[in-house]
Length: 120
Image 1 (tube, rainbow, N blue to C red):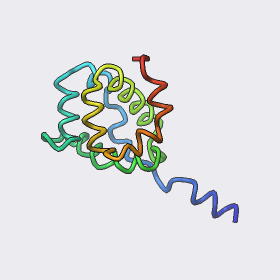
Image 2: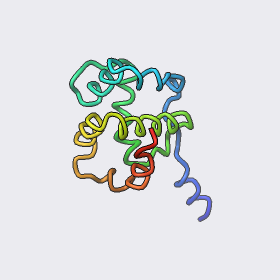
Image 3: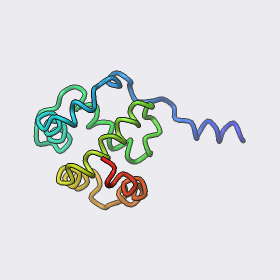
């Protein structure tokens, strides 16, 4: 039984690491790039290949607490959340309305979100 439990607990795979070397800081520092990604995620604009992959992966990552994320993806996600919560709350709210209309994830990750507030 222990083997079955370990197998169920371990993710079958991780998301592709194809875009793990994207410069997240460059995107966050550029209003044009950041707006492009947000517009892609919101369905308001065209998506780059990496934006499309993010858009396809984001719902699963939110639902399953990023268990399939690589270490770099988790680090990048933390950086993006910190930036949006502290410096672009307008974009954070738009994304929350789209990806968390019932506040399920906001509630689940409340401690993490509160922890990054003010730590830009």
